[in-house]
Amino acid sequence: MSEKKKKIVKSIKVDVDKCNGCRACEVACSAFHASPKYSSNNPGRSRVRVIHEPLKNIFVPVFAGEYTEAECAGRDKYVIDGKEYDECAFCRASCPSRDLFKEPDSGLPLKCDMCESEPPLEEPLCVQWCLADALTYEEREEEVEEEEEEEQMEDIELGLESLVDKYGFDKIVDAVARLAESKKGEISK
Ligand code: SF4
Ligand code: SF4
Image 1 (cartoon, rainbow, N blue to C red):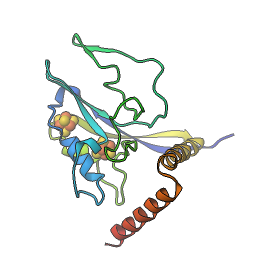
Image 2: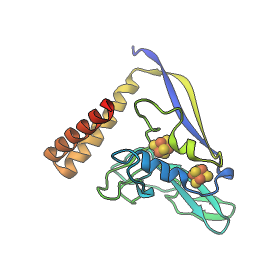
Image 3: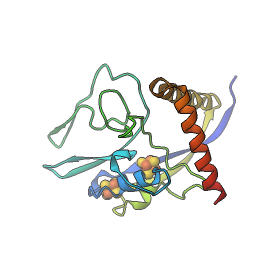
Image 4: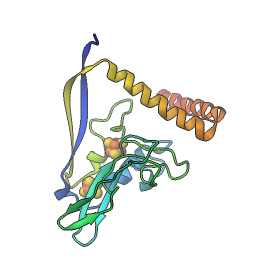
C-alpha cells in the first residue's frame, strides 16, 4: 500500500473583474525566466498570457499548464456575456495546434512553475507585480500518495524525451552542462 505524505499545494486565484489588462504579469514572468534572470523581457516567453475581448474590455489572465503531444479530439466553446470566444482561448496547455505557451525561438513548451527558485520568493512575481490585486497567491496543505512524485518524474522524462527528439541527444547534454555552469555561478555569487 502506498504511503500518504503532506504536500503544499500552491495556487493563484484570478479575479477577472479586477484585471485591467496592464500585462505587468507577462513582463514580470518573462523577465524572471530570462537567462540570466531579468536580463530581458518578452511577453511571448511569459507563462501567463492575458486574453482580451475588445468590445467589452474584458481581460482574462491564463496560466501555462501541461505540455501535451496530442491536440484535443473535441473542443469547448465559451460564451461570456454574449461574446463567443475562440475554442482554445482559455486552455492552459502547450499543444501542437497553436503557438501559445511556446518559447518563441525554440518552440519548446512553457509551463508556469510558480516561480520556483532558490532562495524561494515570498510570492510568485506575477502576483507581486499585479498592482490591481487581480492575482492572489494561496497555499494549502494536502495529503497525497507518494506515487504523485513518481508522476512528476514521468513528466520531466516526457519533456526531456521531446527535447531529445527535436534537438538530438548531444545538443541537450551541451545545453544542460551550460545551464549547470550558469546556475553554479549564480549560487556562488
Ligand atoms: S498584472 Fe494583474 S491587472 Fe495587469 S494584466 Fe496581469 S493580472 Fe491583469
Ligand atoms: S507564477 Fe511565476 S512562472 Fe507562473 S505565471 Fe506567474 S510569474 Fe510566471
